[in-house]
Length: 388
Ligand SMILES: *Cc1c(COP(=O)(O)O)cnc(C)c1O
Image 1 (cartoon, rainbow, N blue to C red):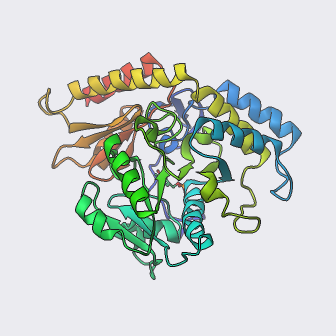
Image 2 (cartoon, rainbow, N blue to C red; image 1 turned 180 degrees about the horizontal axis):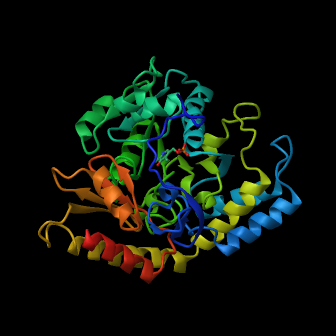
């Protein structure tokens, strides 16, 4: 008999009653070090007092009014994001997939308004993950995710990262935009070299097409910069953010340049819940904390030390180690399991020793601790990994 909750997830048989910082407490009382962070979401740990306070304060004042009215909390956060990025304007929504839908619509609309409606195709990259809506499944191109959901939405072309000839060929008169994650998360923690982002920018400019960065996972400080593309010298035309933005409160955004955003006149797009005062209050606080240069510098430093120590525990330095590669930037790290070792088994083994991680493609285990994890948290994680 089917469970009352739709069986669309392969869940671990584990449930939690409360959490604090990087620690989750299961209903049986066992404590876990949470380096999964709800899939790179709880960037300030569980129930950080600053976020609890703004959430409670806002909850007592006003939750939701809809976008029929001005929302001062939204205007404040949009101004802040505009000040911190290339963007001139921001659309708020509730999930990464929804932010990417907005990005895709903006790219098409931009060319439509300019009198080029035939420019409506988007180029994406093998291994990409952009979400589970029909458009984002087509963009991601993962056959496993698409199975049974035909027809695949038209309008997407996919190339292999680093195949520049293939990319040049894929750019046709119907191309509207190139969409890429500066660091692929679900794809196995694959860092796009900053030089490649610069080359993509040049290509896009040369062909008059837009560049979309999906920073849903790698944004909001994960890489050690506020946004991962800020390791390069260029900026996109459109950027989506979500996971870390609310520190666990569902909120997302699609940021755009003025030229792109101006095409989205009243009535072209919307979201009932998008940018409600509760979400805006929490996200503003998250951004206040994470955008601090000292906070980001600490992510870079802690991430570099942690990565170095993980490399020391890898198969290159230790016989019998279960991983042979450490990938990633900042605190978005991946351990690629050695051939013959299944990442899913290692995930369960680590969990049984009290460390939570997330799987990714390419036999990779992701380590995405809260960005404010303590030295003791990192030491404990290393001990558990070494002990395996
Ligand atoms: C998680 C993720 C998404 C989808 O976000 P949802 O909130 O699950 O819709 C999109 N893009 C990237 C890069 C992601 O990591």
